Length: 51
Image (spheres, rainbow, N blue to C red):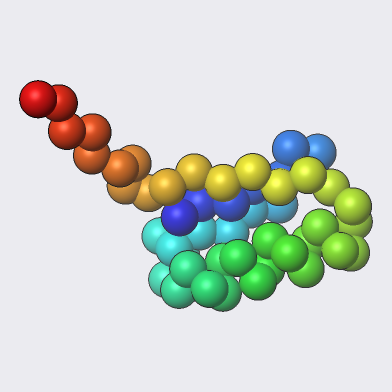
């Protein structure tokens, strides 16, 4: 999971060795402190199955 701010250079990611709950917690804290919008991307992206 990768979370990033749309208004500044802030980001947090599981690829940095953080667990998903910690990434989410940091994103919420960033929003509360700054009011900035935070987006997320799943790493790796989900697999799409086609029939």
